[in-house]
Image (cartoon, rainbow, N blue to C red):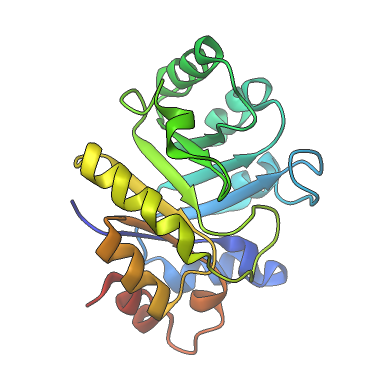
Length: 212
């Protein structure tokens, strides 16, 4: 499976957001937008107006770190999201999870489910064969620039061994050294913010994350 690199605009210069997007347009695969509600995580971030303002040919990956994702999915679909990932910790009921996955797909996007560092892989056994993407957080969600937690790599290895065709995304503290660990464990989709947007050569930074 192709290695996907998804720069997170949480670390971009928001005063020049379109320029920041343009700078990675030709070398990235996706653009990730973190949506935080100040409840599920102790921070606020982007909403639909920001997504609508971005001009890009890259798929927009929306990571919903919010308490009631089912209430917001339609607006993000209408804004052009191509993948929407919700947290297992926010939607605990199997029926509700499956309904949300169906709604995302019905809106023309792929569906992902995310687990926090402390959440075991078994917590998503009920829907792991139904989603297009599993996001394994390598930091506690809510803020950029945190240190990578190597302990989560065991979950990546387990998920890859059980579901070799599943897209496994990792997010949090991804840089040159941690990306290598992620790739070796079986991850094939890496989200990176600071490492990319702080780089003087962003194309080179993205190539480094790919391992090329």
